[in-house]
Image (cartoon, rainbow, N blue to C red; front, side, top):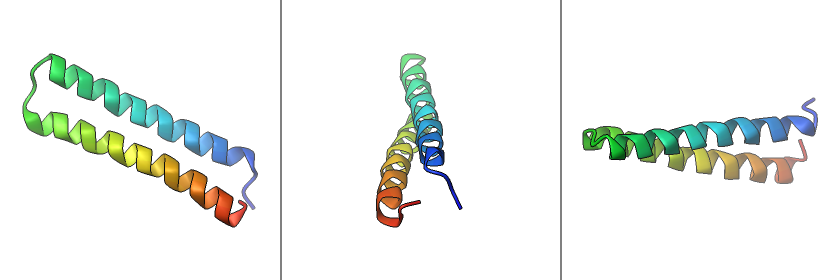
Length: 64
């Protein structure tokens, strides 16, 4: 059984990854990298936000 504090850990780790993608995207824009790197960072950040929302929603529904 998963403890209640583990959802906080999941959300924190996902948030850290999302922030890392945002920082990498800002660096890619600043350093004028190719657009595929910028779009990769955008996709990573968006998926991070989706992961955070999904984790919170799943926790509320299942009571994990």
